[in-house]
Image (cartoon, rainbow, N blue to C red; front, side):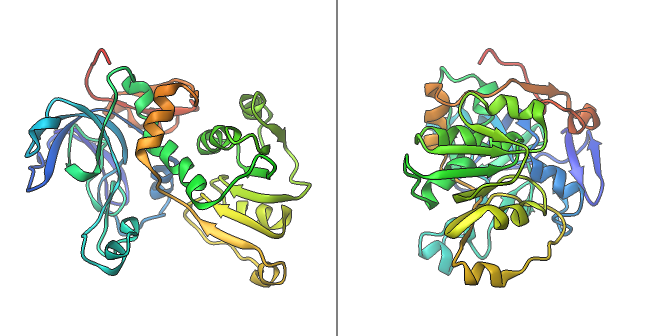
Length: 312
């Protein structure tokens, strides 16, 4: 089958072995998959030990399964496969499983492929009325919603998001639904225009904020957050990147700043938001797998790969 395989370099392969399902699993024919900034960071060395098929955002059709009820259904899937037995699984923290595999990131082939195998418990059926081109945003939108699980954002809270890219745009729309006083701090005037109908925008990191969300995709994001967060305020870090940053941790101690890491989130409410139209996203720019270089260099809001034609 056709895949994008990564072993320190990314390449297009046409004769990769087909996966087969085990107990509690489904074989999924990929309709489309999309490129995340994490994929780009892996190409820069973010996960140097990973070798396999890249990609973790997808919409697909269940081709085979030991759960007959989902065969033929369109699905999206959570990316963390947990063991169910370790301390984290037993204490309701499965996304931090000691033995977890992560689709297209760690220990498990991803979705830049014609077929993937997923645990049934990780699959979510896509509503019939939701186009695949919209459902493809479920995983990153779920990651944005995780912030709402971690922080209680009141309408009176003033919030800053650092970054003007795809993830920042989704986080911004989710936060805006709370009515909070929201400011987007970015570097590109043309990108910031996209945020102007639901948030204040600025190219300058000034002022002070109770909650600062780093969605910059850059090592400098945490430094900017440190500069503008209020004493006893909170920083939520969404950024993952290849590289390190030097920072004065004493400043956080003295000012009693709370720092929270944040990544994967709840799929069900993400699908509900997409279905309701409360979150609006630009069209995805789709390519064939063999044109992956063009896809990865695309300047579109979101780029990805279309594997099969569908009316949905």
